[in-house]
Amino acid sequence: MTLTLAQARTIIDAALAKGREEGAQPLAVVVLDAGGHPVAFAREDGASLFRFDIARAKATGALGMGADTCVIAQRAANNPAFFQSVVAVTGGQLALSPGGVLIRISGGTVIGAVGISGDTGEMDEACACAGIAAAGLSHGVQS
Amino acid sequence: MTLTLAQARTIIDAALAKGREEGAQPLAVVVLDAGGHPVAFAREDGASLFRFDIARAKATGALGMGADTCVIAQRAANNPAFFQSVVAVTGGQLALSPGGVLIRISGGTVIGAVGISGDTGEMDEACACAGIAAAGLSHGVQS
Amino acid sequence: MTLTLAQARTIIDAALAKGREEGAQPLAVVVLDAGGHPVAFAREDGASLFRFDIARAKATGALGMGADTCVIAQRAANNPAFFQSVVAVTGGQLALSPGGVLIRISGGTVIGAVGISGDTGEMDEACACAGIAAAGLSHGVQS
Amino acid sequence: MTLTLAQARTIIDAALAKGREEGAQPLAVVVLDAGGHPVAFAREDGASLFRFDIARAKATGALGMGADTCVIAQRAANNPAFFQSVVAVTGGQLALSPGGVLIRISGGTVIGAVGISGDTGEMDEACACAGIAAAGLSHGVQS
Image (cartoon, rainbow over all chains, first blue to last red; front, side):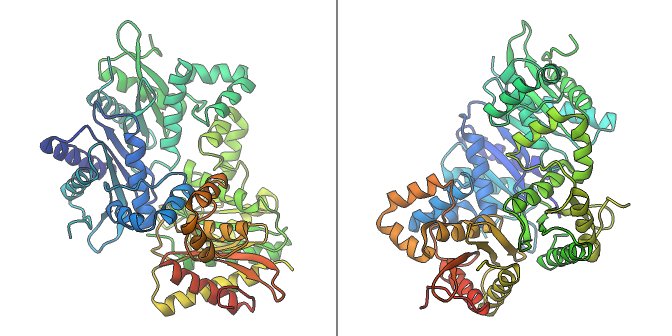
């Protein structure tokens, strides 16, 4: 199954709605397909300039390592040298902060990832999970 | 005046609607702000992998040179060495094909650019102009 | 459907067998999945150093543009400035020579690409098509 | 003596067999020649997207520093600033984790390197050593 543009937009709309509801800082949200290529993106008014790049590096990093960035960030705290070398080898495509979340269908197959940047990593991640759930898809974070 | 996310999404929706109406190949559409940073993006199902990168390089190139890429592509045909050097110096942020169109407010001030890739350069450009017009903004192509 | 390692290895083995049968120069053969990521690769003894990079850029370019590189190379002959700018924007991931061939399942869905470098573009392409056919998959070149 | 494609494939097959025997996560295995150029590669179904890049950076790093990455990773723990500067100066071609193992002939001459990514560094390394041994070649790790 391939992630569709319609699904990606549902994820973004719901993630942004969650952010507004929670009073989050302005967010950037990107949705990537299983190969790490952008399907849809939105940056809220007032979000600063790096937000797209950071959001994308969260989502790409989750796909690249096969885990949500909240998990990767914890591993990196215990093994910083290795993870900094992964950041380098991938041209920076791994942002070591929560907010990059794998998108799964039932059964667990990964069909893409969401990356959000703008508020704390925890808030970014909560908005990503809300977006995925709104599209009827699964994330591993709260399971 | 700063281009808003709401305007960017209106541009994308109208550009994609124009593409469907014209029977275009699957399109990727990106909207950048005046600083060349992505505000919103969508890639239609079935569009090939480079479409985001090419669309972005059309929009960035238009902002970078201060002209729509239909004009730049013509200049490049007459002066290929210079324009290839611009492509090189900018790390590839100039795609030499129509479909990168400046977004202006009345009076002519540039507030961003649209880049589209997926069909012929002419079709890509027509969809970009339709998107800008639908948002009540101006493009220079048909004026 | 996802391209498997077993399929990728069948493609490589059959492509190399075709090359030996035809008396081709030493070849490098790469198989990418639909997202452009390497699944398997082999470089024959005696193949020169750039062969991996060129083979990969043929396969990535085919996926990126949604067409075999024999078709892209012809388009590029008519519009060199645009295609050189695509080469630049993608960091060189488009080799403008035959030998990059999309892998399709019945119905036409693209599940990956083969890239071969080592002999003439025509020979490279013939070996790629032989490999894809041996795996029971489809290529568009001879249809 | 030059590492042959036949040897590289024996190494990969035996490394993957070891991984299956040990119940490892899906692995990516790359074999480089003495010049650091890829000879053969395989990525098991389900391995995440960065595995090729990380495996390659382990193998390239081993060749680049003249030591297995298990040794380099320990040195880096004691001297992180220097090794991060090596990562930077080589464009990321050094992954600071076990799993990059030099391939030697009797007498000790290095003819290439194996890099594996997918499971823990220790498991990756054990599979690399099993592969090298199966090809009748030597690795320094257990000697």
